[in-house]
Image: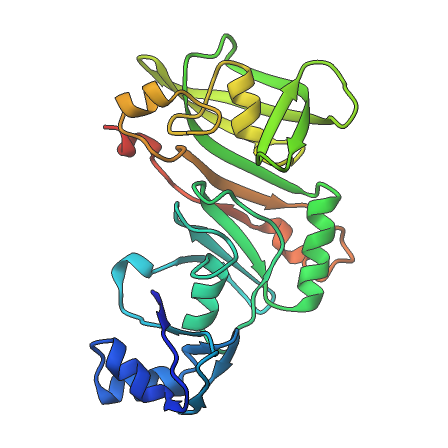
Length: 282
């Protein structure tokens, strides 16, 4: 858990932490020595005297709810299971939590998931790996599969959906059109029906293109809104099932690096999560 510490002119860091937490002397000493403190965005490992304008965050470990599952890690990459209700970057975001808990590591984000979308996120651990991953995502060398519980039953067991998407940045909204229009980009989304229960269906969704909010907006356009989605779905149905965040998870990632890539060895890996989305309803 990241906790903000209110600064005070000419105060010692350890004194501020002691005043504003229930941590003991040795716990505070360990937090500082392990670089679990950031002042103005930079890690420190000494008990410094701070300014009243300093922005201070400390990471308090051993909190069950803050544990991040590492699915895979080597010298180049780290794949983690992102919980819902957390940003990939930003204060108390996924990157921040992992870095503060692992002071020796620097993470380089290469793709995003929406705040309320859970599942697989890969970070580069070196700048070379970051360049290779950035290129792979840009050139569509990454297969990404999601599971989603949607409202409705699709007419076909499998389908490839094609449309055009406009990103309204001011409203943070994706608008879908069946016809090409100025400012609209082509999108392609594939799905496979896995199971239906009443008015709900569990889909496996593959992103062919990767636009902002593509899965949520595209499925809603097809009358298959993701359950719990307050932006593109039905608030009435979301309340019926007591869902306040979209039931959408990135469950599988597979890479297709060229043979001369330093990350080509990852082509043999299927990064997979076993997430049962029905458990959020049943």
